Length: 162
Image 1 (spheres, rainbow, N blue to C red):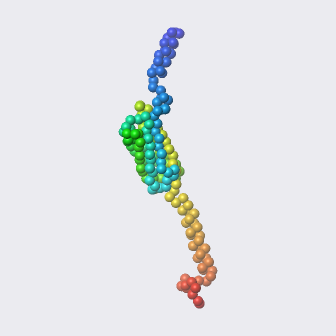
Image 2: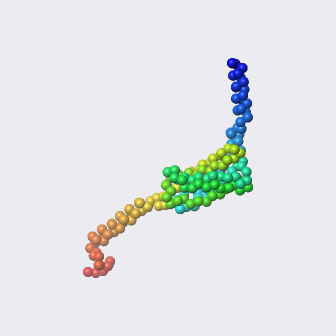
Image 3: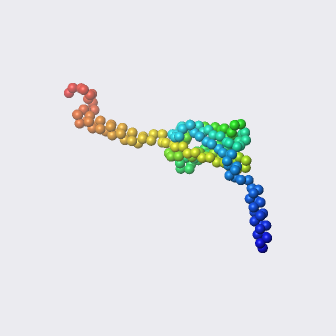
């Protein structure tokens, strides 16, 4: 019984030693992604740049972009150049939810799937539009109230004598 356990343990040890080390592989292989700005509004163009380290020329990179509600905005596959660099340009849809724009890039490098994520901010096109509208309407109502108290009729011109 003892020798059978030792043989099984030794066999397991040999299997573990023969497996590639994912930690060692990850030290040399990586993806980096960057955007030209940290926040975008609806309709803005996002310039995404990145690089694949440890891959081969023409390495394929899968790009996925979701808004803060998890709605899929974009899914594309791009090809890295001979130096491992890639570029993607896309517009933020007018319907994108305000909050984080989550960008994920993935590639299979030497048998391992390497993934990198980045979050940028999406802001509403007119974040203070409700306040601006309310102030504008209140100003018009106040102006109308002042004009009507001064006794100006709708047919009289300002500055006209009675």
